[in-house]
Length: 155
Length: 226
Image 1 (cartoon, rainbow over the protein chains, first blue to last red):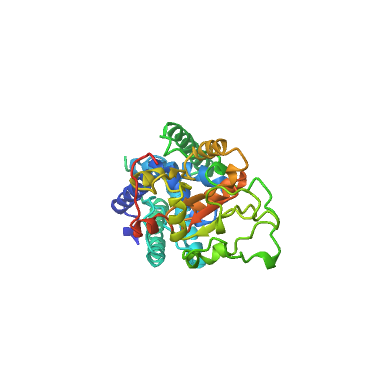
Image 2 (image 1 turned 90 degrees about the vertical axis):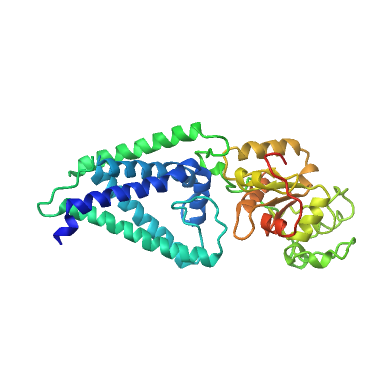
């Protein structure tokens, strides 16, 4: 399992995860009302929290993504990103179980006009994709705790 | 990494995100701005207590006197509209379109209607409100419809302006049709709830929304003007 904590792999995972989160954050930062609508569609958040969440969460994603890319405060950024992914997976799973077909609002906040079946299929894919990203977080965590291995320095 | 350091870094990142969010939102254009307080986004609890439901035996509306071939097209939801209170049915002077099933219905925020009724109301010059995002509205909307996106920060301003235009209780009984994208779009219902909360009594939600309007080949306006 030494390869799993190899700096070569770690640095790439770290930067890739950072880029994914920066890319995911930008459309939400550009259009907060659409993202608020997406959050509303999840039917999980009280009214009072929808707008603050829609405003702040994309910036948390952006700053954590940048932190990973530049290797600054990467353990903290990694942990926050792991927590966000965990929350996303739970939120989408709950709606999948409810049969509430929603657009995930992960990388695109425009109303895509998809059918219910398409949305349900997308939600399943999104859960798998988020689990994959959670594995990337797991790799970073594993590498930082790996016996004697040096944490990756991105910058 | 110590937990204290983690905590400090996490708090700093989140604080920086909050500051960035507030600054970016303050600088955003009107259509991209989000009200920081969520109740501005869409309808909160209605400001008034709904009128008591009429007795169950009254929930089936009598066929309007002016029944035409349009009647079979009126959806079942409209037939559940409560008739006006006895004695007022023929007495109150009705606005141009408050006839048949389009009577004021203060006991419920909105009634869902379908294309034929919508077309009819549009032909009579009823006010249409487009609850979709302004950017989508500009790409095409029902002629005469005003942009009233519930997710944009100026929604309260628009609602207040509409209320100022129709401050007379008689005007609040005039029909208003609200639409969004049909399907599972709830924006028009939210806006209806909001308007009903400030005493508008005759609101209709175009259930199938703008896609149905397009499908019917009806005229469409583009741009930011109604």
